[in-house]
Length: 109
Length: 115
Image (tube, rainbow over all chains, first blue to last red; front, side, top):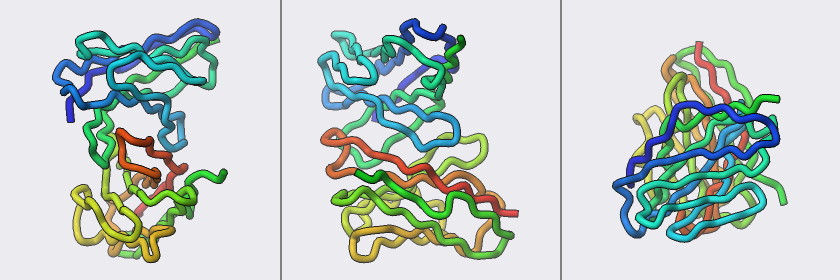
């Protein structure tokens, strides 16, 4: 599976959009990009995933560059409850999620 | 729909003792996974069941760990004998299909402390 690179931490003001970047320059054509988050003391929570096209659901939007070497997770209106560690994971038809260190997002009032 | 449940939520045992963790997946999910996070480390995959069969146990650290899923429903993870380095949070997840077809839904985890 491709390795992903994320900034270790980010801050965001409550009510503003949080844009979390992820680099996956070695991603192959069949690898999906998955985003999970872990809120303190809880299990990881699925957010969204995509292959080539941009995706949107009730939680977030995923923007994947045309060359697929990077992507951005967008939380359109961050709340204090969005404070968590966000993981970007490249997945190729595998049974396991390989978690990196993720980005610690702190949403402040 | 009930999510993935894990029992107990916390367990404190002494080195050398045995502990059994239980995971109940989402009903109808054939795929069940175990992960763990030991102190200061990243979340690591342990193994994957498809129904009652072990599909991938490449992440199991050593033979002190035994996972079972009799009948293809709930799963247990036994640590015997427990060592200090086994302390951490053990997560269970389940999915209907394999990844890239589906997502894994995680339970709240079991926090294991070995003294």
